[in-house]
Image (cartoon, rainbow, N blue to C red; front, side, top):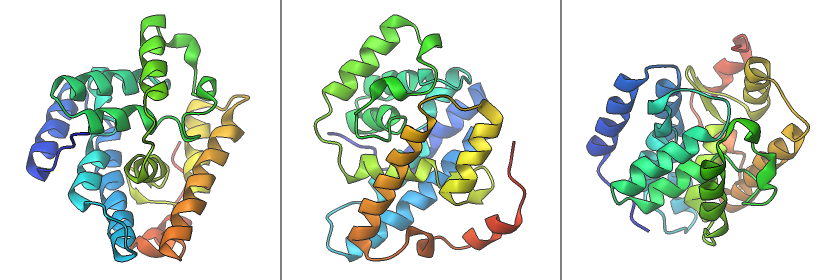
Length: 213
């Protein structure tokens, strides 16, 4: 799959999207990119053939579908997929979708609030997920980093989950999604032989700040 390698170009796309719909998602995306680079760099040190530029740019653009507006559903995943797929970057487009489904494409119906997703969007997202047999480390890293970074910087999974829950509510599938993030965390930590939290400078500061809601 083709990914964006040029960081300047990826930042131009992110800045363009933010001009259309500015919001906290922009700084969140910058921090997801940084977190992804930290993790992928550590993975390369442990023998995995990955590219930090690919990871960083995928982190920058995972939420680019927000350019059309904000909903708590996976509509932004559809919009991001269409935007980047039309530019020819299928790898980045896929990550716009997969980051919203932490359970490795299982339990598709557990995504937040399918009820407000138009049927044509849902059909496309399901087709994309069902056709993605290569749920690789890039997909997993960005999915995890989406839950490790907010607009202020790096944070723990638990604090991020509480923040999102307080802002957008929870549902009967929330625990299933949380478990998916923990499964990815466990897998990546088994590959780098340490806690992911050891990779992030300043993460301790998040312990002493209030939960955002």
